[in-house]
Length: 247
Image (cartoon, rainbow, N blue to C red):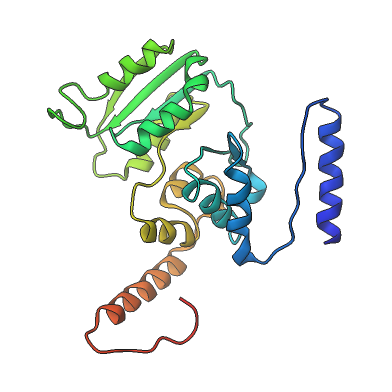
């Protein structure tokens, strides 16, 4: 509590010097209540910013991201170590897959995209179809952004068998992108929570690989996956079983 009050006073001091309207809210709770505390506040905000100090907290970072992003549908700006937070980026990379999550992220970032000097829409392993990506993958979202004043180009990338997150992260480096705009996981709720609680989301392992504390060791990941596989087999067993402890 003493550390919390000290941090609150320091934040008040910084914000007072900016002459902006602000409010500082603190809450002391257990880890189980952090996600809900963040969710309540994120629901009434335009944007949640998650900085490197919180990302390095492997026990709290995923819980905060889960509460602010998956439980609200509101946008989240993730700022890794060594990066500078900005809402006026010069170059932006948009990860596009013609899904609802990607469309929502683009809509939430329209002001940011229309003010950028360069916007690159990246489509990984696109397939031209009459539905979904359309006959010319990426052209539809590029036209939409152009109508809103953005300067857009489309990059169609081949994954070569690599994860999409890895391809996007490397392309962001190659194009000197300041910000990546993309949708969150479109999986079912259980799978989203498993991704977050596995130590670090798969996406973060690629995008934030320079933050080693976010990347769990292979041994720990293998152990957790083995434990989940065993739990799944038990849940699917025809006989009735009792599972002690917490799930």
